[in-house]
Length: 471
Image (cartoon, rainbow, N blue to C red; front, side, top):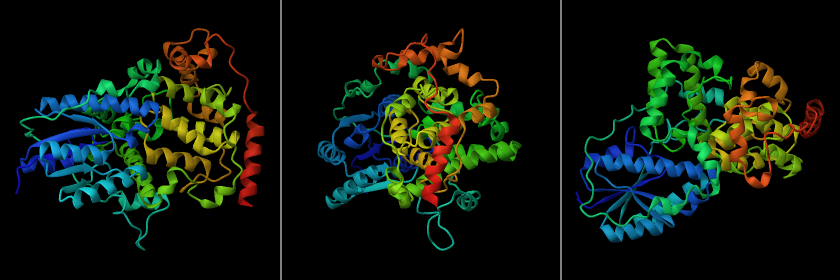
């Protein structure tokens, strides 16, 4: 046994409850040094997620401060920072919660090898997922490639109960130097959009729990029918909090299980299925890490995707002339998120009506979404494009007009974000023009653009290209 300090390296686990690493560390009674590192892998994130990460780090630092601990901030390569802190504090080990995207896996593997080679304890914990990606196997011992059998395998699989936040945490007698979060300028790339997007963020563990409670008290009962209607508050909106670990996935799972048992059976079951879909995306990213950048089905490598173009730029700016598509892209610019049904329509329009490579859309979402998740983003784009696992049939081309008629029949969602289509646009529709770069020279009094492509012609072109590939 040792009383040497233990470094707790926090990343996307910025909470006190449902935190296996922290619970295990608190039980030891050793001095704890909470640490957040702005390393090259973290700095590589897009504008919106990096800005939102800064908000999460600030909230978590306050939560630790209330427990008598400090969150030490350091910038630089992770191994270099960790070695430096070990030398400064006499720490005997480093613990962290696992991440699963390829850059994080490579970094963490190198860190663990180096620290153990130096005689230090280096230990990783579960905590980001319901089940570790390698724990769920098919009857033949392989991994699942299709979601439905995966869901059947995990639906009743035990999930560990969430541990409460530790009552006592022991800090250091003397704290090492820490960077100032403001000096990192994590929101620099957001420019003037940060002030607008900030209005829609629910930051920190308490806010995430309040959001979960509100969802389970009402909307979850009709989740199965309302989750596809973007004009109503029919979803949990927990994606941003799960992204930064401001609430534990196991806490959410068990809370939803209780609601299913209490009477909200259908809606809660649908919600649990969506939580499992999140796990499925990580299951696939672990077993096939190329999914984040390459076609999951290599036979799609020869498909004649278009690269960047003026049409793709109109898509990025929410100026395609298709109201349902443009409303979704503008929602993302104003709020930092986009309704999931609309994400599918927006992605289908880019990859099928415009025949543009899914990576262009994936990268735009990675720059603009405050709830950006590496596994879910890759899975979603490849599913819609047809190149990924469990993909939609190649002949499924979402018709934006038909989708709008079905899921936004009264036009409330489109009016909410499209100023040009209303004689008296609301604040959110106008906010888009205050959030976008000035270099785009967009004004709400400009005429709404004509469609980039006729929907019928775009669909026919997509079916011809996809059909040729599948011939």
